[in-house]
Image 1 (spheres, rainbow over the protein chains, first blue to last red):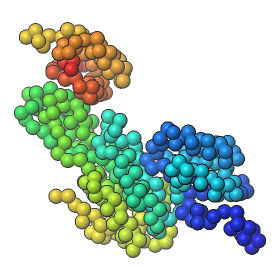
Image 2 (cartoon, each protein chain N blue to C red):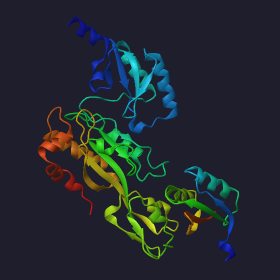
Image 3 (cartoon, chains in turn red, yellow):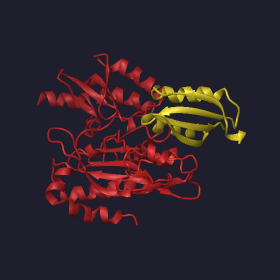
Image 4 (cartoon, rainbow over the protein chains, first blue to last red):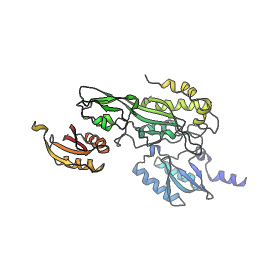
Length: 297
Length: 78
């Protein structure tokens, strides 16, 4: 009892509540996980984090977490308040752990990666701003991949979003150069005898390589958006996410996550990831109640 | 007719990505606008990547033809 009373004096428990402080094997030392949506870190901020880490880490190193955050290792419990305050001075917040919406992860996205279709970074920031810390039955992980290469591993997320572009072809500008058929890794575009592309939409993964390579813009983007996957997780009992929506417009993402969490909170059980809820209640039920309202025409 | 004649040629068969693109880029930098560079590439990855990157840099591919075990592409410098 004495110890816990003592503990309350030493640290502001409100700070601890939403997590971001993780117990270590060393007595009184904790890992402090920072909030870095999409893993993008402004260089000035990075330098300041390094200064703070140098001051407060008793172990002399940071760890880059699997969800793209910087973790300061070996922070003494007595230093929590001072550390949080110093980080806040340059706008750096502490992340979360426990049963709530975690910081979204994302690939580099379309700003500089030639494969990028959707702006994964922008969306990760937006979702972090609107939904970070929302309480639910268990951890709730989201990620954003800008294209079908899926670097952000959307199949392992409670909700994963992967960028897609639906291509369309026009005859007039086409010079029958055949570059699109060569660029297509899926065999969704095949040349006929005179070099005209024949498109098999059922094989298309909507990566947009045909659009990117076409010298005359005969291939263009019909629409861009996200494929949505739900119920994925890693851990002791991994589960691959189900593809629940083939196309979601960019502006509907936050709303989609909110509606999914509403469903999860009313259908799930304490300590159960949404994948388990989906297995128990039924994918069809989940789709009927959540996904159906977002079907694109 | 002379408009479509290649003023420079470069054979990049056996050269891997992205070195083949970098060599194409460096060659184009030494040329004048509207001049044509003929690049010979292996089929497969080089044919998937180099034309895409050339387009990203703003140049135009005006001709593609099979050549021995690879392809010749004609690039018009922007």
